[in-house]
Length: 315
Image 1 (cartoon, rainbow, N blue to C red):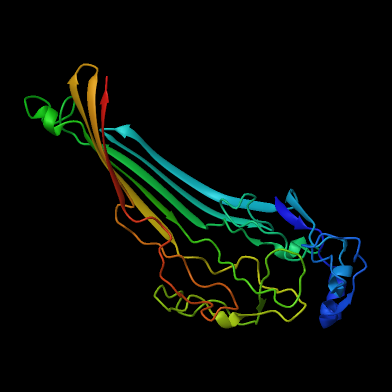
Image 2: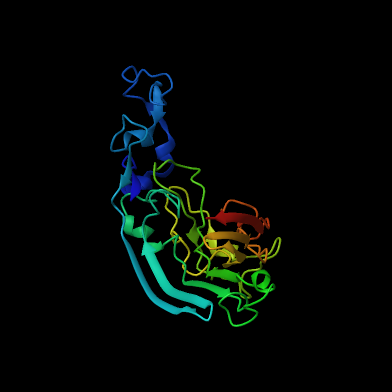
């Protein structure tokens, strides 16, 4: 679903160029009396009279079912069920997702209307949720010591060394496609987000993205601010430039101590992002910025290592 801005001027009107910004008499003067409205003044810009609903500055339809998306994937899952204290699950997905709208609630992606209401197909690109490679691996291993285990299963040492288990979860995702933007400074289409135009040169850096402060992440010369009163032709989300890849490893150590039958004390220590891996937020993507295409900051987009310890008594 997508917001649709119904008051966008027709494409044919763009040929008028700077005439769109000229000031003309306001036919709604005295009719629209709200002093906070830009349509209550004696003059307005000519572009307003060319809108489908000139008596309104904006006409927006929210959460409209106007988008189209496709998703294709190959998925592999390998599972080792619990045996001798070891269990594992490995999953890999190779996929591609295409659409012409963003995710409806903006929780998992962007949420913007069509750049050009009169050409929804022009917004078709990789989805902003597209991640080509996704890996998930989880494992749990109960150490072979203590009661009902192969080693040290009797005597006073058994409850001390027994009941221990370790587990881990590893995730890896290739980056989502970057989105470059332009500034709508010379007109008001009343549309969605605006994109730059391409220059015809490759957008990839020959040596790949430079993940360092001030490093060139992609070729900024591949994009320019679109000419006045035109739409930029860059892809809504770039086809071959992704944000930095991300990976994470969570670890856990736990111990069950059986005091008597039916009474168990469980100790657990969990480390999220156990290796304190840093995922960077990516480059500047606004074509109007002086740092466009570079790693202007090295800000961390994920959460640093976080450790928590708990003790639970079960009866």
